[in-house]
Image 1 (cartoon, helix red, strand yellow):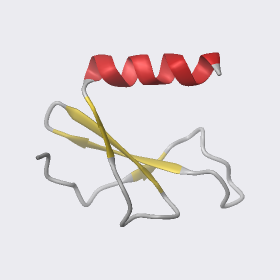
Image 2: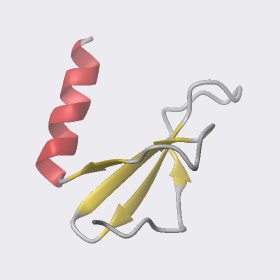
Image 3: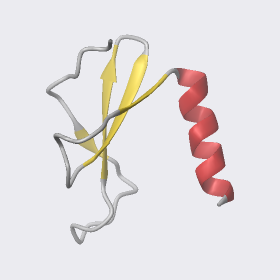
Image 4: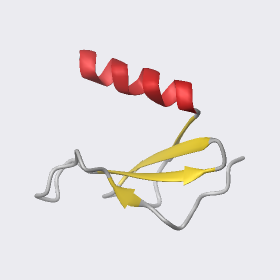
Length: 61
């Protein structure tokens, strides 16, 4: 299991009004994504290719 880092940053594409926000963090060979309103909730783990595919899919929706 990937160790959860303590250094998270809010996505520049998140809304500034406290609404739909995601935070990103880097771990070795993994990009982590979580809901900033629920920091103790689930964390998505992506490899480089997986994250690129995830973003492409979101843009198509």
